[in-house]
Every structure is written in C-alpha cells, then in structure tokens.
Amino acid sequence: MVLAWLFQERLAFPAPRAPLPDPTRVGVANGEKIELVTKDGTRLAGWYLAPKTGDDGEGRGRTGQVKKTSPVFPRPSPSSPALLWFYGNGENIASIWPIVHEFQPPGAALLVVDYPGYGGSGGRATEAGMYGAADAAYAALAGRPEVDPQRIYAYGRSLGTAAATYTATHHPVAGLILESPFTNATDMARHAYRIFPPFIVRLSLDNLGRMKQVRCPVLLFHGTADRLVPLAMGMQVAAAARGPVELVLLQGSGHNESYAVGGKEYRNKVWGFVR
Image (spheres, helix red, strand yellow):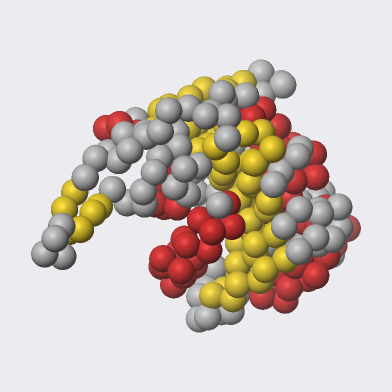
C-alpha cells in the first residue's frame, strides 16, 4: 500500500522516452517541430501540422490507376479549424506520428505535444504536468494566424481523454472527441488493482466529473472488447455530457486495437465531426 501510494503516478504515467522525429524527414511535408514552455518553465516538444486539402495525397488517373500527387497546402486563413491531439499513457509522438498524420482532417490544422517527461519533452510526468501541457498547447494552437480559435477540437485517447476533458472545461472548444475514456482514477484503480483500497489513490483524472460541465458536441469511440477500460465506463462518460453525444462502438476492438479495427470508418467519423 505504501508503494502504491508513492509510485502511482509512475503507474499511470510510464513516460516512454524517444527523440522527436523531424516531420519533413519522415515524409510529412506540412509538419514542423515546435517547442512550447509551460507556466512552470517545462519545455515541451511537439509537432504542428499546417492545414492541407485532400486526404492521403493520392489521386486516380483516367484508367483508374493510383498515382501520387503533391499535397496542396492552402494559404493561411483565420477560418481553418484545428485538432488538438492528446495520446495514451504508453505513447509519444515518435510512436504514433503515422496515425496522427493519417487522421489529420483535410483543411484543418493539428497540434500534438509530448507530455512532460514523455518523448522529447523535459520535466517529470505528473497529472498536473499533463494539464499544464494542455494549457500551453491550446494557447499555441489558438495563436496560429491560420486557425480560427472558435473552431478548435480536442481529441483524447485513453489517458489523453483526461487532458481532453480538462481542455474542454478550461478553454472554448467547438467539439470533444474521446476514445476509450475512463470515469476517474479511483474507478480505474478499483478495476485494475482490486486489492488496494480507494483511499490510497491520490490521482484524480476525473473525466466523469468534468463531463457534467461539457456542453459542446461529443464524439465518443469505445471498443466492445476493451478489458483495460471497460465499455461500461465509456457509457457512463457519454451519459454524463450535457450536450449532444454520438457514441460509436468499435465491435470486437480491445484497448489497443481501435485504429486497426476502426480503420477508415473511424478516421472518416473524426473528419466529418471536425468539418
């Protein structure tokens, strides 16, 4: 119990380290490496993807064959929507950048940062640090000249849902996208570590409480075979929202299979929501 009390943040935030890739070197022509600084002085590494048109840079010729074309990047306009991306606890930009690149909605900007202690960011991984990173990321995205600050959407997966619901209750967002959301840290501890009493949990990560303040549209994904974060938790989170909610069940998907199982249908749902 003493060890659980002392090291619970390390369990919730394993903080995998990895150098931040250069977007242009991995083929993401509309991307750039950025550096942000939180209020406590922690330096964060991230990617900013400028708005682009089209989906995957592929077109079809007259005979139906696929041909590669150069992506089109429109001139900056204050009318562009934007997606603020928060990943799961065992991820970082180096491990998920192909998914982030694939999911960027056409015509929308995208920003993702490594949490403190994660990937290429400095600092130590904590709940407060994650929220500080969310504040810095939102401010940076809203300050982009091509981004309409009234059309910023927050996306969070697993642990990242806590950062996304935090953002939705502390900043104006046009919509909230959640994947595999849990209710709160106490419920997750009870589910995963049944031998420990709830009173030793110091973390909050209170998605359920914050959703009662969320009035923007919500798009929520959850795998029906998710054993890490039970579907029942996702249903509770969906029911707590005060605004319109669309619940998408990923049939047969476990916690870490959602992108593969959901495929283009998942991606197109995100695109349509942001549009």
